[in-house]
Length: 169
Image (cartoon, rainbow, N blue to C red; front, side, top):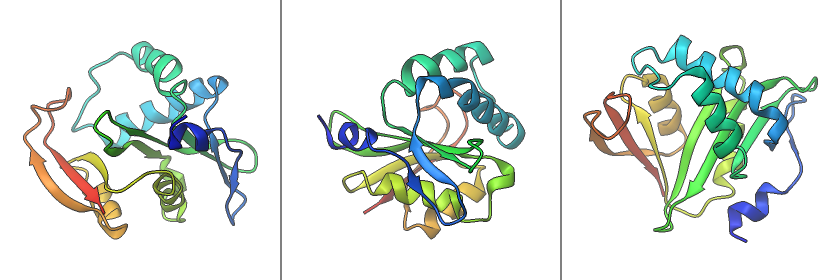
């Protein structure tokens, strides 16, 4: 069992404001898809999805969640506020693959809690991509110690949107 697989089996982590971070389960796929699609549409119009809603839902249900490296941030009532997924590639490099937070959950330290949770699971260095127009995400990651490693012109992602490779450690 890899480090990430072992940790993903752990129970929820409680946060000060009553929210918690827990591993994603198969039954969460609908809520995860709704959050993912809403954030992508409302806040990332510069990088339109290249897949239908049904394809995104299938990927989340059949690939991302079963991989066991996806954690959800939920409030006391169990409503989904955010998600983060991580991986370690065949070369041993650690990645933050997805980090999405609902708009009304921002500015309360919840995104930071998700990120720190994931960073506690991963070896260093940790890499991630963010779209270049997503200045808010770039600033968020810089505040948490990530630095720009390289700029891409969009040919390396399916959206065709310029991106930034960032690294911590």
